[in-house]
Every structure is written in structure tokens, then in C-alpha cells.
Length: 99
Image 1 (cartoon, rainbow, N blue to C red):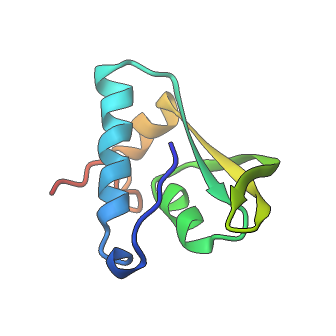
Image 2: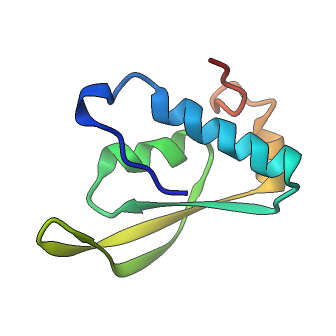
């Protein structure tokens, strides 16, 4: 997964809810075993979302995206189905947010 949200709408939980819905769809409906999220290496706000949802940093992809006038590297975060199922009962994670 990847995402981009207008700066005026950041901080409202929109992206966490959207990502959580896709994660649930992937693991429950589609029976996926792994889901990844890719974020620009310097974008701390984008990286906070997968961390909050229980993802772990998996790899760095150098020069992954042309952004404005230069390349940026991405951090790939990974969540495995079994880890997500374990997080379902953990209050620190938010895998079952509802709108």
C-alpha cells in the first residue's frame, strides 16, 4: 500500500482508518499472508501510520520515487497475517477501527 493525503486533512485519522480497512479486507476477505506499506524515508508522519498499525520496517528501497525534483528512498513496512491476528487482542494497536 501507499498513500498521499492533502496536508489540510492530515491529523484526523483518515489514513489510519483507510489503511486499517484495507488490512482487514486483505487478511479476512482475501486471505493474504503479508501486506506491505511503502513510505518515503524522510516522511515521519507517513511512517507513523504503519508503526501504529503493527507493521515492522522490512527494507529500504533506494531512489524509489521521483518527488518534485529529486529521488527519495522508501522504507517498506511489512505485516504478516499471524502478527495481525495477535494484535487483534492488543489495546495498543488499532486493527479494528470503524468509521
